[in-house]
Length: 213
Image 1 (tube, rainbow, N blue to C red):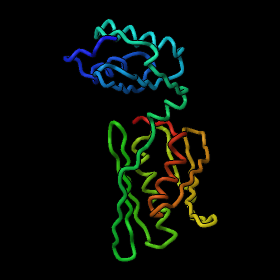
Image 2 (tube, one colour):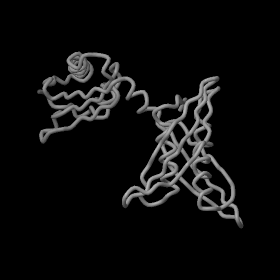
Image 3 (spheres, helix red, strand yellow):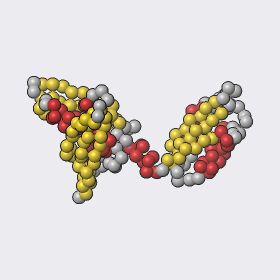
Image 4 (cartoon, rainbow, N blue to C red):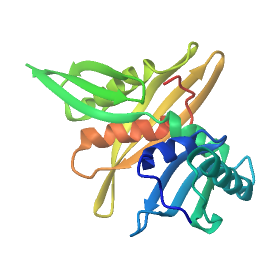
C-alpha cells in the first residue's frame, strides 16, 4: 500500500469520500508508518456495502494515487428513516430564567446546523406552573423551525416519582393542517427539573415533527 502523499491531508481524503452518494460521515485512521490503516464510514442503506467499498477504493486511487486494501474499509449503514431524523433533531443549547416579583420568565435556546432560535414564556412563579412555562418556552423555540401549516401545543407536563428516581412527562398536541396527533415525551431528572422538562418536550418532538432546519 502506498504512503499517503505528504501534500495530501487526511481531511482532503475524508472530504472526497463524503462526496460519494449515501455517505454520511467518514473517519480515517493512520498507522505508525503514516499510511491509511483504517477507514470507517457511516452511510445510508440504499446501496450494497461492497459497492461503497469499491467506490472508495476507486476514488482514492484516481484522485489521490492511493492504492488501498479493501479490508481496511469498514461500512456501517443506517436505514433512511434514522438518517432523516438524525439530521433533523432539535438540539438544546441554553436555558435561563428571570424573576420579577411573583412572575418568572423562562427562556430556552435551540440550535441546528444552520441557526439558533429562542423561545420565551412568562407566568406565575409556582412549583407546578414553572414546569409548564419551560415546556411552553421550548415549544415557542420549536415553532421557529416548523414548516408552514404546522403547530405544537402543550397539553400537560408533570413530575413523577418511580422508586428512587424522578422523571418528567409531557403530552403535546401536534397539528399539521387538519391533522392532529398527541405526542408524549419523558426524561429523567438528572440534576435540574427545568432541564428535564426541556428534554422531555424535545423527546416528544424530535422523531415526529418535520422541520426545516
